[in-house]
Image (cartoon, rainbow, N blue to C red; front, side, top):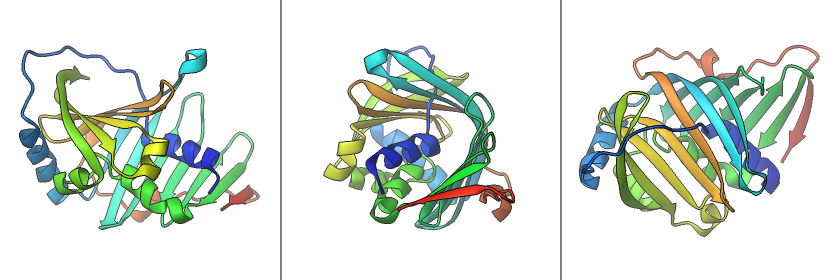
Length: 231
């Protein structure tokens, strides 16, 4: 898959948003935060949430922001599907899973289908980052350190920093920050992609108890849509 499209799919599938919060005097120990994540991962089947996405391009100091909804459904280990519907300026639908990614633009009635190929494992890794990943998986793939504590959308959180161990992953993403709530949920993600650029996603109205049907994560394309296929 072309590097440019990998970056685009990565941005569309996982992230972005401006953060706010206050720093507390002391942070939870890392093992306590990881234990919270393990507890959530043990029963994770999927979620629905609102997403606010901001992509920052440092060289021109520009932020591209959008809003939408995200649905995540975990079928089994290694098989998680995601659908994001952007309803703001972007107005496009994204579905990722089963080894491919589809991006549909209703304004032009065009869709791009990307075969993830060798990049599938990398994309799957980021898809689960903070959504069902346990401490063992994170420590295996990343060097994990503890950040500070902040309040995000009224929720007390602890930030953890993850630096990819895999050189191929590190070439695309230099560092990942996760804001973990006291309930063990990831309420915000920040992916540093190099050169001061980043993608920051903030989630709200998160529902981990929702019953998610197959159709909720599947993207049905309208008749007559032009499909561009990339490998």
